[in-house]
Length: 581
Image (cartoon, rainbow, N blue to C red; front, top):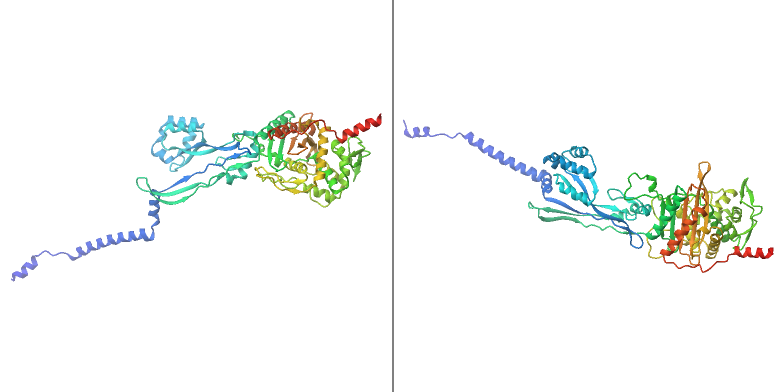
């Protein structure tokens, strides 16, 4: 036997397949790792990137506080005050078994004025949710109390809350915001974008220790604007006080007062009654939010007679000293009767306005072409907005049709058959006072007067304004203002109802002062007075007098009444006495 062959056969042999199996397993592991790496980095990289970003990227928001609303003198009408909001993280509350702190939850419910069971149910309704509001915009004192409770998962967030220092006095013009600081009514809504501004945000990456290591993006905050109104809060307070007292005294349904600067068209006061408290609107009827000075329309009645007289003067059918024969005190137009309470005989244009003669006004209206008369009503702005840009402003109701009967033109001449807002009436009287120049009205403070549009001649406008002074001196003496020459016109109309007119009245007065150098126009509307007094000269004229007096004093306008003014009416009375003797 060969010894070499014996040695080879006795050596251990390595099974080749085991080696290859191990090698294959190792190769598969490396291939799997390589495939997984390729899948993650090339085919599906976004998932891990997202998870990494969730752990390292943060966004810091920079909120912008809502701008303030101030009056023309800088007095604040709407401001934002710091408050805090309570919110819960249900996941943290469940994970920390915070609901076991029953006394703490009861204290939280008590301070928020809520039922504790309803509060906890709201939190655990969705245990995986990470954010639930518990109460919005609480006071700092309440926030400090809640902070001391130290309930896991209950957090506080800083916010701001709108506050209105003047309350119900300026509520209708300023308006209010909702819980998210979005403007809902008034100026808050009209200028919501400017008042809101634009919040900023900074997006950055942080490391494991919370340090900022990279600024990814930054959006610069845009500061909110403050809004300066034309309103003078001192005059606004006077107007609201007097109006509220009159509405209560005469048991009226509502009322409005407008005070405007004649030269600029700026609205110095806009008051409505009843009003509401914008700081606490709980259980407030929605109808109280309506700004009646621009939304409600009324037939203006005799306050339109100066426009008819001015139209006749403009066309040239009469002169300011013309005499109109109103005998026998009545007439029929198309089978309908037009009359005065008594036969007033021959009347001058001034007498027509003083006595508020329907006969005289009708004859003036019918003395001019129909289209000329209608055009002057449209020119005066009785079918347009006044320029305030306030939400909900009505353009009134002025028919634009081809066919008008003589009776319809007659009733139009004394303020029936059209409906206008108190703001439109204020613009018309401001037009007369400015010598026939119509300007848009504005609730925003102006740096300089606007040019306006001439729609009446200066001479005829001044003639009508002088006649309006006689109206106050002889007929509407409750509208007088001590120390000042005042002109104006009363109006008393029936409220229109479906199919005709009802039994309710509207009392109006529109006037100008001082007559020697007109500065201010005031319009007063008392809607549906419920007592025995309902004429404009009884319910609206006294309010006009007190509001005008306050406005003139606040604006430091010098008195212009130096004695008793002798009117043409007085001269005629003296001549009559001499002739009788």
